[in-house]
Image (cartoon, helix red, strand yellow):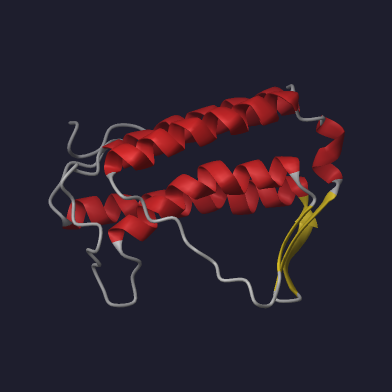
Amino acid sequence: MEFQKELIAEYDREAATTRKILDAIPADADFTYRPHPKSMALGRLAGHVSETAGDWALHTLTMDKLEFPPDHKFEPYIPASKEAMLERFDSDVAKVKKELAAFDPEKWSSNWKFVAGGQAWIDETKYEVWRSWALNHLVHHRAQLGVYLRLLDKAVPGTYGPSADEM
């Protein structure tokens, strides 16, 4: 089995599945909707799913350290519209695919660090970050988005086979 080829194929599958879920969000959806006060708003969750597949994956491949100073004001991506979100997602995923295809497999064992306010939050190999914080994190929040769709009584696309709405 060719390790790098398998990682590329997996990212391609997960990105395609993620796009189906993002595309299932109705164009007129209320991006402020929250199923619970502690839940992320729909727009923020959709933006987070998009940026996990895009920016976060790209940073994992192209940087060794992502550092925010103590006074950094994080601005989460909250899309203005479904159309804008899908455009950004498609553009970001294309960038990630290009970087992943060119990525030196020897670099998977190099260190990647995320530091915010002087504290290291992630300090792992690039491979561990890719698995946990790019792919697994993406799948986790994508599943949450599927629950939001269900709670809004919207069709949920299948992810690893058909959904109840497709049978």
